[in-house]
Length: 281
Image: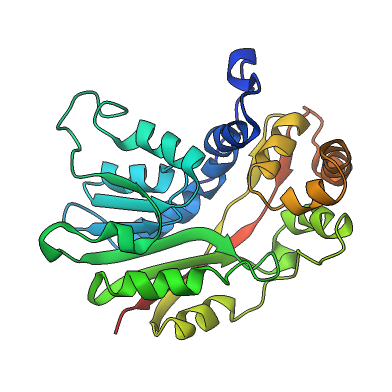
């Protein structure tokens, strides 16, 4: 499955609130759906269903949790970004997407790290996911190691832990666009993903690799403006904006996207993402 092109946002939806809230909304409405094929491939391979107790690290605005809950899984998500978490609660809490109180009262969305997600009565998770892709920026996995170690303490023995990362640069058209973040800052950010990034991360957390896969996740946008907003919502260009200014970053991004602009005005960038399934000791 490939994601559909994002729809044009209505003027009301794109009216600028506080910048952080606007970015979170752009992530939820534009960018996050690009990873749907990754979520689906993992859930299908691991047969996620009613017997699954899932802990999502860095759950963001909750789309991956919602997809697991739709399969019957009991889901808990943690994140440190309150603006994204607010949108996850809209999607997952009973009065949000499910229609009435009690429909999905076992879903939890919590601010903080894994320790905030200790299950009731000592219940343990059998699946931990870290879907935010690593391998495109220097040090982007540094904070994930301690979170994985903490999550392992909440998981069953032999529980599956899923890590995600960018594929080889030659298979990811977006990698050229991400280089904008490096050109505009003194400190290098972008770097090409390495073959063993995910395995090295799993080993540092004491996890045992147990399979991997690659998934096509093309980035498709209705127009250049949507593409710029979606990419900015990832946070990968924040340092560049601080080093120069927002207008300059948007100008450079627009130019970098030009080779991927199609005749109908849409933007299309084929990418491949990789996932690793590891097991807790």
